[in-house]
Image 1 (tube, rainbow, N blue to C red):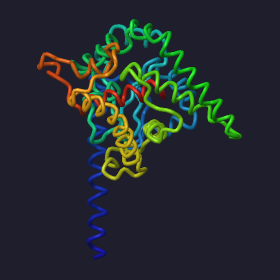
Image 2 (cartoon, rainbow, N blue to C red):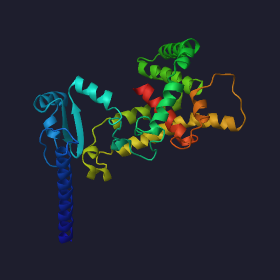
Image 3 (cartoon, rainbow, N blue to C red):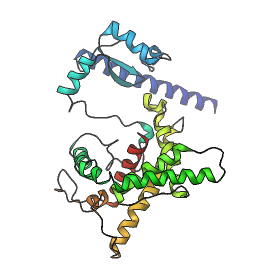
Image 4 (cartoon, rainbow, N blue to C red):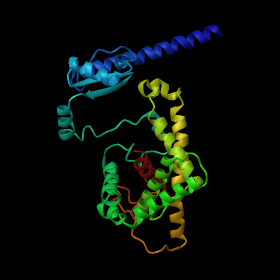
Length: 316
């Protein structure tokens, strides 16, 4: 039994060593052929992590004085290009924006819900451009925002003030002002997407969504060892992916209820009071070319778009 355990340990060490050697050779080859800018020498396995210390912004400044305004750092096995000059940044994002438009999806955000409707995690390409176009032409469009200036915004603000007055009159010693602002913002976005207020202070659904969405942003923003050392992805040692996906699923289901209510109403022939076309109507009536764009959105994709829209606007 001891010999078997020893053999497994030796095999694991040899496997890790082979991965380190392969990645080190790849790193040197990329630097030699000029695909990566030069940078400080890095240690095996950990890369330049220890050179950043507890104040990475100060370390970046010191390293930039020695290695120039653009350099490569290795955080574990993850290559990172650091730009420390506004002139270089302007040049790169003005003339090479398409090349740099891709994004890394961190382990915490990898799950079962996919990236088909998310502007946050979808890679740059035809699908991302289609989602961006819908946001800029149908969601953040001036006429929709202008139409909300009077009645809707004023009503949401009046409701917020009224709810705070009720909470104060009830004898509550401390009022969670942030929660009331969240409810107001949620209802403003709800009117853009669904043409109606979605929540009130007594809404259990709203409290749950606020909690789960806040946890998503909390866990997704924490440093994760699995991002720097791929071998740890299988184990999720900090539990960040598991926790994040639990809260994503919970918030996703709550946001999906609003979409389901509209779709069920349409299927049953229930007509709503006269209103302007909202963002959900745009998503439900979408017809793409079926090549670079889907011919229509599935209910799953619409749920993702709605969830991400609510999450981004309210928490960022």
